[in-house]
Length: 460
Image 1 (cartoon, rainbow, N blue to C red):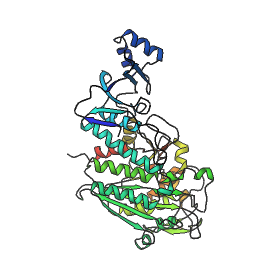
Image 2: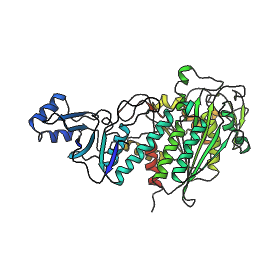
Image 3: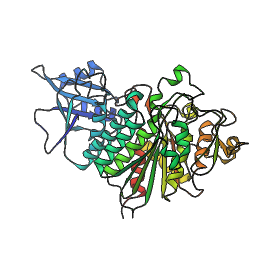
Image 4: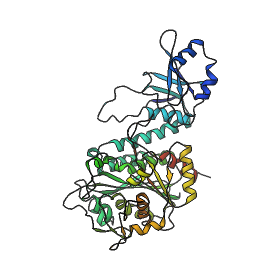
């Protein structure tokens, strides 16, 4: 951990003065002439994600100026831990007063690296903050996000259905939750036929992972994550380029685990049910085929238009099962469609919601927290495009148009009409590096969802 919380700040720690452009202009006139000249030589003006090192008379590092977007930005200090010289730092009282939650979160995420196979060349610099609940909250969120990233970044060879189940089991043990799983052919006995159909071709058995936590007297909350640990496309095989990053097709499950971690860590007054249908979509003699018709837990029959649209097939059983407990809210997270990425790009997960006011609240909250998502419609007239002539529903539309909406409408069929539901179609990946967000697996929307759930289920 690159952030330490202490009762008092060490005197020898190097001070960091946090500024934006306006704060720097207000502060610069009070600096020594040599300091002003040095900063001017470096071109430092307080721009976000910039910094400047000020030497002391002895030639040692005496002070750091750090530019930020604003005092609550979740990645405010993320440009510093791997750029500053190794050592111990503290925030001084000059300049902007950074929110402790943002300081802890941004610094910890700025030091994140996935180093399971390639050891890091250096340790991140250490930031010492005063103890407090806000800083602890920031660290808890950073830990959940880092764990989510690790799961997505781990290659499929070492993150199959069993390993994903082990991660959920460890989480259950940590927070005193109940863990269970239905594995292999037991899925047929327990009436999860669509999960079995998609995963049966792999040598690694498919499974439904379940975690239950909280007081049964509290509102029931179901969180469902798509756990396709590798997606070859099945018999409708992906291209080599399309398959390259398919270790991340369990990104919905990873984010669901991250959200569940925060729900339990912050003791939200909910009765949580976490469900992860975990499979590999592979090719073998018993692989499910285009044109097959699969019966689901709900009793609906799915015609398989394309075996590469497998995510919605495995989610159908999990959503139907979640609804059987009459939850107050169902949330599913899934790396579901390329259409959502074409529409919104990698940084904006698509949000589908039963209620327009809920969607608007979530979009506003995501923008406020710099953890964005964007509302897309459950446009009922498009349902005709996913109706099958030989089954109840087909897992592909008639054409590529409205692909993300078609997938959402498909999922909606497996929930009761009056069930409150949020569907997040996310990328779970950074395709470009930004401070605190290296290329690779990413936790998307879980801070926004956490804050929304805290508001929705806040104790009276």
